[in-house]
Image (cartoon, rainbow over all chains, first blue to last red; front, side):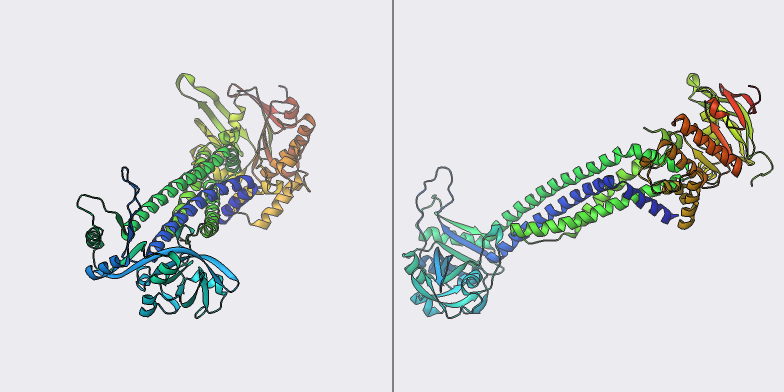
Length: 402
Length: 236
């Protein structure tokens, strides 16, 4: 008997292709929307946390100047110099690495190719604070750093764009009119968040950049890595005290520099992405609801026809249970086919969109299961409830239903 | 369980009322009627005389308020809804005025439907349905859906659906009501030959004297009671 009922249910689905298609479509859209949005939201969150991790752990950044507040003058802030760096190194003991950074952009030429990239002047500490690993070659020697020799360590993008699979070690490139020998290649970190390519850069000794690219002794930025187990808040306090003293800021005046703690940035960003994911989820939930209402409409519109059908079946000798079972199987089949297609569509859409938006594809089993169950429930409830009412009718009344 | 010697159907003091209190309508008011195996009965009467009500009660689609409905010795009024459905499934065949075929479903599948609920295996179902369609003269139309058939053909499919289970009685509620005179006569000829050649008991409701003339016996209803019951041809 069950087999017969399944047969009847499938027959009914085939005979009402448009209705079946619309029902499935409603479920597919609802499920696909929810899963895609949540997957993208999760991907964005993951991208941001990856980016923060690639910045380096326990990282502090020192920059001259203050963020503009109402009522402050826009005076050009005094940059740092190498003596500030040395003072920090000697006076604050809880730091693992202190890297002075001068950043600039330059066109780099190798052979017949040229490439515009960002040029970083720093010390070996930069590789620690920014979490860089070497793919090949070596970091700078003391002598190279002291004398400002033209040697460089290149990022993965540069290796790919300029060297075309050749080993770049030992080659000489032209950077802003001087030749620099490649002594090291960094491991690629991949695409950073928001489409920024972190690997599109090269590192030269600090002095080399100051002398040959920037043309002054200024340091734009100091990156500091805090030792494990040390509270970064304490270090920030010590840094502020030291720098206020060195920059002769009298009591009561504002700092003319800024200390950024990546931990704080990370917290702010992850808060933002959580809000974002919540928002996307809410939008998606609305689309699931709309899909559900669509299913409900189709089911209710077909009630008249189906009520007569139920009347006919009862009149030729079908039991109420048999009719209900048929409608249940119909609803379950449509809902689960729709749910599975929705999951497939969502996976495809997520794969494409995550590629386009440069965020990782984060598969979330929970949301797949949840939206599948939700849509299946809507399909079953609205497919089944009107049928239940109709099957309880006297066959005569059901047959006369207009 | 069944009594083959007595009448096929016996109604004793059957009443049916709708509504309650002042709004109560007495559709049947003590009907006594016997129908024997092989009979061809036409039930006639003006609108509201209770002829459709008696049809629905005989078809186990409705239940009487009081009185007895004995089908082959079984007191139908005491049966549960499920038992009445099973009685309908195994002993009764229905033909409605409005055909009531499943839309977008082929003639063959429509005819197979009652067999499906009986659990008849697929190829037997097919053969029986094809044979039934042959009996109503629709060989070659098996794959057509109701929308592709004329009214007369649709009613033939409905008759084939009622016949395919070899029912004890064929209940036809104004079977020609939606058809023109010519198609109506064809359907009546078909019912007559089924009764004459295959001995199928036929009970038909109609308000048309010309159609009632096909029956062996005519029962007239007025105000919920049998006013006249006589073999066809005897004086009215």
